[in-house]
Amino acid sequence: MNDQSDQEHLIALGRKSYAPNYRPRDVVFESGRGCELTDVSGKKYLDFGSGIGVNCLGHQHPAAVDALQRQSARLWHSSNVYFNHPAVRLAARFIELTFAKRVFFCNSGAEANEAAIKVARRYSYDRGNPNKNIIITLKGSFHGRTLATVTATAQPKYQEGFGPLPAGFQYCNFNDIDHLRSIFTENVCALMLEPIQGEGGIRPISNEFLQSAAELCQANDALLIADEIQSGMGRTGKLFAHQWVSNIRPDIVTVAKALGAGLPIGAVLLGDKSDQTLQVGSHGSTFGGNPIACAVANVVLDTLHTGNMLDEIVRKGDLICHGLKVINDKTEAFCDIRNRGMMIGAELSEKYAGRAGRILKESLENGLLVLQAGDSVVRLLPAYTINDAEIQTGLVRLQQAIESSLSDE
Ligand SMILES: Cc1ncc(COP(=O)(O)O)c(C=O)c1O
Image (cartoon, protein in one colour):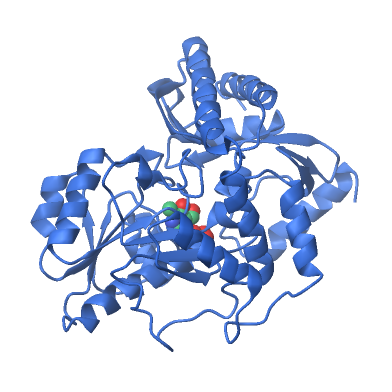
């Protein structure tokens, strides 16, 4: 496959073969290296989206490729009936580096959150409180697409037509601590939140809200679950985004996306309250702790803690935001630019209202991959390994795309 007609053929085939739940762009990627992707016609693209915050070390990072190749020549799968070396090492590393006392491995973000919800309910049940089963989540959140996690996702558009939804979920107004207090009854077993809402538009939870929410959980023996599926694994310049707020120690942290740098893996980090909750037979996942995925995840953890990687994430995130401000001076495209490290959202101004899709399309034509969040936010989640020259090139392409988005199609 190497020319435009091959690409068109594949797109047509894909369009009639895939379930229509996605709306893929007119491109078929064949390879990637660093922050550059190449489609089957040979066109190159700078990747500012990392496959929705997944390819955090870029494409074909040498240490990740090496770990994958070595592990694939040894053992692919053995099931959780036995231990495997990369998974044991990964769990032990998380325990060494974080609040976690135990780790449960699975394959995706939704699966990690599903497990966290089960742990929270079981935790209260084990204490003789079977009715203490309500999970509070925040409006605008995104926690996944399984029935429980889509119910946790406090956005009606994701839930429509899938009822009856599981009972026992309540929604709190974003950053509204008075509302949280008013719905925090004795039957609440957990509060689940993203420290920075990703799909909801790169919206950070305020420090005050997080601190008060943690106190409420503590006072009511409810678990604080931080969904760090998008914000974790270094994305914000710390291993986890909640670490930017002093004195916050969640009871559970869920991880996926960047953890596998492109391989499917999820994890639930369990603190000392719930580390014994999942007793034998209570939960499981055939593929969880897959040796190849865990071998690569170990590389991600090691790389994040090598040299000044986390500081560089902060520096590069600020560099990109500075570039977005310069673009804004020229185009007036944004009314707000928000970031924590390399988790970046630029909210479109009135002048560009409704043009996010068009900006994404023009960017693609210009050889730049960017993401959308919510209706009106251009979201950037580049690989941590991107270099300054690539950042500048990407920003030039983005500015061109923004300018072209105003013209008639
Ligand atoms: C914060 C958050 N939680 C959960 C999920 C669901 O993850 P997955 O798509 O791997 O199931 C996502 C995915 O976008 C997410 O951003």
